[in-house]
Length: 319
Image (tube, rainbow, N blue to C red; front, side, top):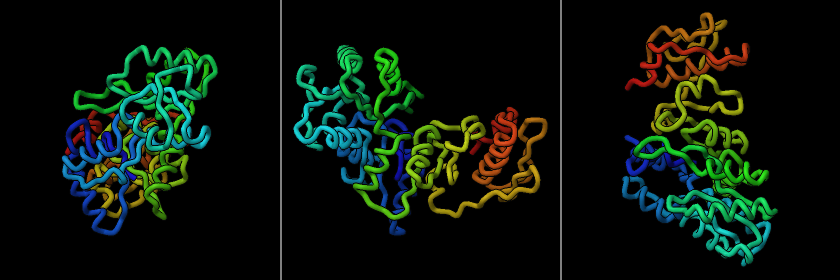
């Protein structure tokens, strides 16, 4: 189960090597699903974007948080229910696919759904906020505070969720990661006996996998970086760790420990006076695994994240 933004593509550009890695995974008989918290676009549009980037995909391969939200609403309110729409094209399409009726009329609606839409008018957010404060049930597609774009990290739908929650005093029912509905919806649609969630965010993809009771792979092509990894509590720690999607094609050595030293593939990582110290040589991915191993050991023992010297930060950002 591949997250999209920051894993397969960033904005309009493919992550280097992603298409080749995905094709290789499929050639080995593994099913691939594209799973995204981004609710702005319908699956067919996402699939065409993937195809344009050299990644073979159909609408059936794509599962969005909007679809997961629509299922939650359908299960509670049934087919034909009118849902106040505060979202973009992707949310509208998901509601219709589920047999629900999107509406902008607050007097007809039985529930509110919110989701990302780049052209969403402030008036619609205002109306949704008032309805939620007045007691109308509310489902949010996701609560991501940020989204990766070609211009840099920008505010995500989670900023709107926080605004409505603070105004109304009501917590949203969230369909997207890290909550379970989106991953459950993906398994329901695509199948699979040993699902693996692959993502770039500890606070959505990896935590979502843990909440769903499945393994996860963190790739370092998107949002989460060195500081996030070093300070990750147990609920945010991935099963596997790699620089990019080629990590799907290789074995992952498990760090071993000799006292307070984490050993992995030629690297030795240790904590000295609360700071990270590394020696040895090896692959970049094994560097990250050794760092994560000693950092998590130190965090669990002391409650404090390990300090990473600037010289080591340049290594983390290297080729």
